[in-house]
Image (tube, each protein chain N blue to C red):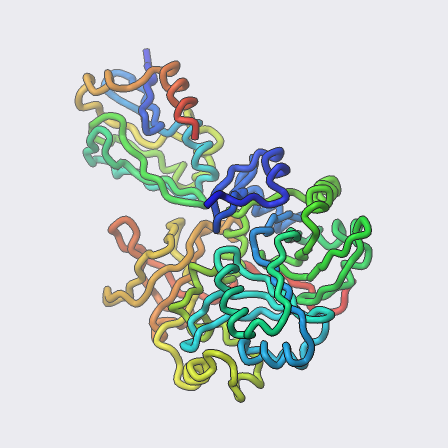
Length: 368
Length: 126
């Protein structure tokens, strides 16, 4: 299969991107300044991320669609306000995660943002679950651009007046060159920021304007270090078909009333796990010194028994030290539990810690 | 008089008498990206030509460091362990990795000179 390119591919090349193939797309891993610089720039200024490889699934329908989606997602969608977003999961009957996603109630239906590697399979699963009753469009004509970091609200507001009035996990339509863009105040870096759904033909011009106003292109490498410092899960690492949202310590994403009533795919397992607990759970792991523990690093307890495995690990530029997440047996999951990480045949000390490593700064209340 | 030679694994070695100082090349650091961790061979250990002699890690991945020739490690550079970013800023001077007592000078014949290495690095393309 031929590698796909996003609408910003030419612009990435102009900015000297190093490319990697990711989920069938040619994507920038970094630009000339490198991951650490890009990471810090996002935390202090404003970074632009091309996330057009992700799926933008529009599903159209009325009240019956809301009812049908509530049979799938562990959310209270009936009471969700228009233009509000929720983080959720597409699960199987055993609560194994097919994908994690953001669902937004829009005028006339829902917009669901899906992971690139999962989107085609998600589409098939959802089409089947919804019995092809509704119009569904996995829109390839739109790009998705994230703008993240403390200067982003002011920069984006110069192009889209009123965007800074949005609050975290809220969106709206904005006009740009007579075209409609859907903007949500969200992202995956731990910073205040936005995600912009924009027609492909406008995305390059729009991104160039953001750059003119002081934002910089940031690659997937820094996106990974940013989300890891923020303690956010990445599908294929922390999340997968062999993990449930409860094991992933994401119970907060399940609506309270649905925890009681159930009635969604995987709810029996979820309710059982909420009541009885799980064998393993996702935790933060802080290695001592500068040691980096990558994915699949084995975690040992003080009696030298294997108690878990690292799912992501790198060096966190903003915390100036190594950071990792992984799964351990529940009884070893308390903060400050001493563990050992086996790297290149030797065991190194580390401790279990709370997440995030870097404090999130979302704009939740009234805007300034 | 010192002489500098290069390996296909992108290490340099500066030869002064029977002592070799080893590091990684500028080209290697450009391929690796920001280096955030380094592990060096302990003083007193013997390393074999083309064998493992440490690790460098970027934010992305870990890569082995190989020794271009055999010998006994006499000294390692703790300043790059404490501040691995030095490897990106000055890889071929300040950020040397370790010094060794050269076991067999004949091993140096298999290494490249500067012109040969530059041509090799350019052709390897990555």
